[in-house]
Length: 154
Image 1 (tube, rainbow, N blue to C red):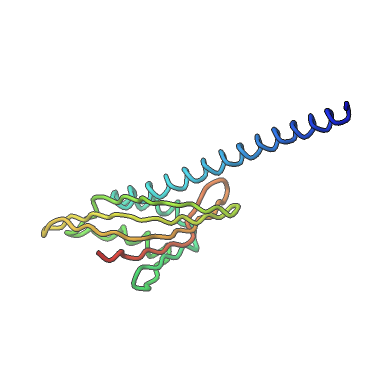
Image 2: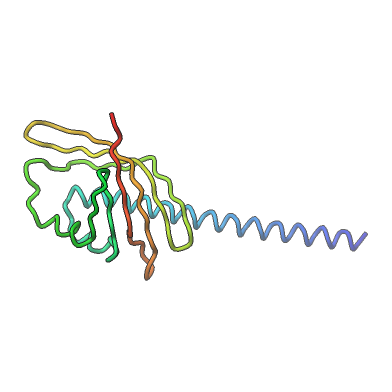
């Protein structure tokens, strides 16, 4: 009987320790997911503000972006686009939502939808796109290495 109680006690302790570890891992995963979703919101804000320095930091040197027409843009091209005047049509809102984060160690894939609002002399234009961004964690921070965006037909 004592042996059975000892075995049951050991199983109970191991179960509690295992649950604690699972909860800790889930909490860490939730923090990482929240961090990456915030980066997506920060990307939107940096686009609106035309914050060239932000993109120099967040985009990895090998960054490549594929647009909905199949065009490719690398980091140098993307960052230098902020050197050109904004023109008459300006991005005024960039709101990502419906985001999902998939983690693979130090790599993450973020998918979602973004609503972009532009103001022009002719009025306001609103576009919705689906996006996929791939991030890699390097030296303690996330960097985007690849992105793709496709327009949602209305």
